[in-house]
Length: 186
Ligand SMILES: O=C(O)C(=O)C[C@]1(C(=O)O)C=C[C@@H](O)C=C1
Image (spheres, rainbow, N blue to C red):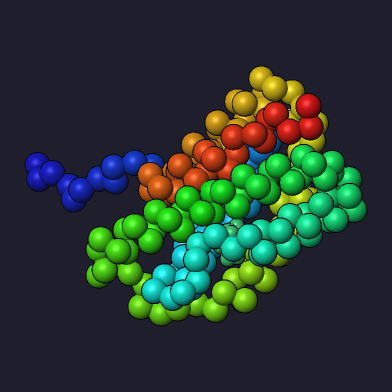
């Protein structure tokens, strides 16, 4: 009998679950937000590529970290812990931006053709800050248990990277952004 049309190479979690797939486990929601912030890095890169704006903006970084420390207190998270976590988020964003700048420079046909507004993107980042701090607060117990935390972070990163179809650059950013989640609060 004739061989049927190409079978899917892998199970799509979406069709199984019947809804949008999300990173799994206790750290799934936190990791989902981390991935969203990493993906906003693509928009930041698009807003800056081909302009005079450098990837690194120390004034904005200081504003972000100041907002984080103030809101951490209100959310019941240690400000130093929150500051370390968000420094990692900023580092991850810069990894993505530099990687995309390099890619777009050597393959100009892949460069974005429209330039999003950085001020609007920063408002998006500010909203993510609030949501991330809520998740840092909610996950304090599991993050305090080193072994199960490491297992949960691996699970969330693997499933998150797969369902969001992250490429090598964005997976590297995800590793950087989550590398101290389980050590925080110790
Ligand atoms: O807002 C920017 O310009 C960004 O590039 C985003 C971001 C961040 O992750 O918050 C990253 C790098 C900059 O140094 C400042 C802030």
